[in-house]
Image (cartoon, rainbow, N blue to C red; front, top):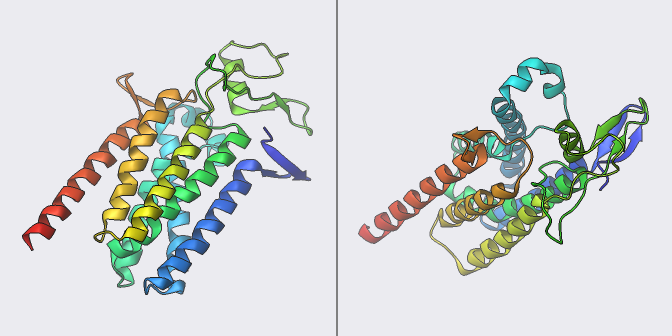
Length: 276
């Protein structure tokens, strides 16, 4: 794992940041290409993606703060200016809300645009989670499975202090390893589980896209696929997740809600189509 690819003075380029940029660039290119074939203006899609990205980053950071609010109160500057600390569902909900407003404001069809976006959201997630793996965030619970991975101790060259990876620091803080340990405990590669599911979702959605679907079905199918996969992967996650009654993580609660909403909307759209 290589959390930091290289440094230029005090500036560092992380694996996560690079993969996030690649994911956005690839998805944006394909979205604009597909959208123009569907008659959606390219400049509109470009502006929409910028609006969605900014809102998603703000929402992802906000949900991270809310999930671990006590830590934020004790370390506000560290949380606000950290390169870590983004919760996907916070970004997704904020990005979706901002996108719906922008699409309607520009007089476009929300469901038509959503269907164009759906497959490439999965593609971006598949690429982005590889960045999580390279950086070491979003790691899994300790396990003895043969495909378990260990995250290394890294040293900040400017201070000579241990500065990561997140799994290593967590295990060190819990007393599960000693400061002279070279690696974290073996853990589930939860990032790779989710990346694999995202790639599978991408190919399923592309298949459905080629077959043709009722308007809105492709995006709602994306919600069903992603929320199901995320709910299951969460059981393997070992990083601080936030909990509801010590049973479900914050992301699992949101997953259940999204799954229910997507099911209800699919049924409603099916009933409306049959009655029309």
